[in-house]
Length: 181
View (cartoon, one colour):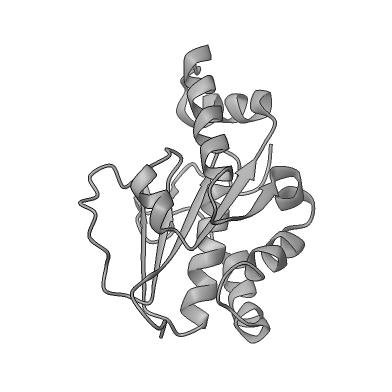
């Protein structure tokens, strides 16, 4: 249990840059650390109230001042913008406009400029050496090596849902590609 209130971990980054993978890495680490967690994403309607848990894990791409102020740890991911926008097109079938890309870049920079920012994972590291990316993430959150040893195989086994379009626990869509071009 954390000493006072929820420990807040924010995962943010460009769309299609590995944030869902990071979210699940943190979620599984905290579960293995035997902490009560609330894992949520896309908090557009957040009322400012903290969940009554040890760790609140939030995945969002948009910057929120209120959330940035209470975050204990912010983890971000980056990917070459051309690759990320092509991946978005393959994923959603929609081309991003220049202003949308600019807004996404601005949100990422704002998260990286917070006092709680601890780690920026390059997408290429996730693709080439996910175990190293996982180890780097573990160093930024309240989890021990023994928690990582239990969480790592579970993270490797995660697959997109086949029986529904979206899984709210993993935040994966049925057409999710977790590590690839």
